[in-house]
Image 1: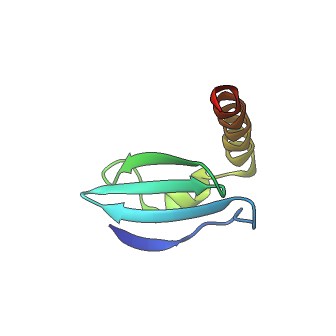
Image 2: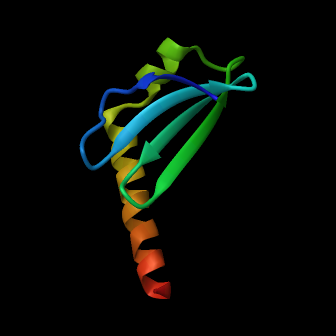
Length: 77
């Protein structure tokens, strides 16, 4: 997997990275304990288009999902 770059919107609490592998882009969102990965075929979007897709609104949705994930994990341990 090749690291393409860090995306706008990254912070100390949420790292957003772009990777390329096997004809797909991987947009990886990471917190200290969890991660979410979105796979986008190279045929469907360019690197520039992906950078535009990751808007503040999309990032807010990702953050909400992380909150749900943290709540789920806290229920089991």
